[in-house]
Image (cartoon, rainbow, N blue to C red; front, side):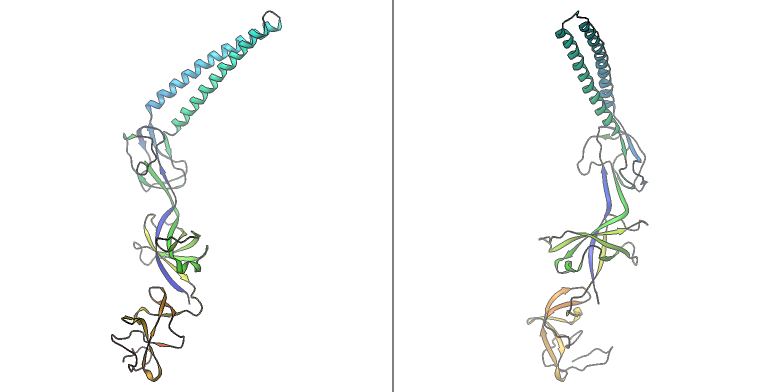
Length: 324
C-alpha cells in the first residue's frame, strides 16, 4: 500500500519575462493591461525618445556628408589613375589619392555603423511580448518618464506563460529516494477546494539543502484552463511506495512519557506490554516505525492515560474500542 505524503509547494509560471526599458524617454501609449493575453511580438507600449531622435538625425547628416566626400575622393582617385596610365603623374601621387579615398570610405563605414546602432536603439522604443502569455504586471502609464534600467522593481511590464506551470517542492531527505523524473503527483489549492490537478516530476536538484534537510523537486503541471495561479501555494501529494517490512501505526497509538516513546501492545493473557519504538517517518495520518514492533504484535490504537505494563485489557470485536 503506498504512503500518501503531502508537502507544500510554490507555483511559478513556466516562463516569466520582466520587460525593461532599453532607451530613455516618455511613455507615449500602452496597449496591454494586466490579465491581457498576448502573442509573441505583440506590442505592449511605445516610448517617445526626443533625444535619441535628434542623435539619429545628426548621425544621418554626418553620414550623408561623409558619403559625399567619399564619392568625390573616389572620382579623384580614378582620374589620377588614368593620368598615371598616360605617364603624366608619378605613381606616388596616384597612390596618395587612392589612399585618401580608402580613408574617407572607412569614415563612411564607421558613421554607417553609428546610424545602425541608433536605429537599433530606436527599435527598443517599441516594447513587445517575448512569447505567448499573459501580462501579469504593468508598472507604468502614459506620460511617465522612463529610464534605462534592469533592477528588480523597475520593470514596465511582466509577461508570464501560464499555460503550463512549474511547481517547486522541498522533499525531505528520507523520502527523495522514492521519487524520480516522471513520478506522478496531485495538487490542490485553497481557492479551489475539491479540485485536483495532476503533476509530473520534471527534474530534481540532486543535492540536499543543508539548512532544511530537503531536496528541491520541480513538477510540471498543465494549466490550459488557467485555474492555477502563479505565485501562489499548493498542497502537493505523492504516492510513495512503502518500504518492505515497514510497520505503521496511527499517531494516537504513540505514548510519550518519562520512559520515552512507546507503543502499548496486548500480550499474553490480554495484558499490556509497553514497547519502546523508534520513528522512521511521520506521514501525517500514520507513523512509520524503524524498530520496536513485530508484525504479530497487537497494538492498542488509543491507549488511555497512565496505561502501564501488566494492565489487564479486554479485547473487543471490530468497531469496539478496547479498554483496560
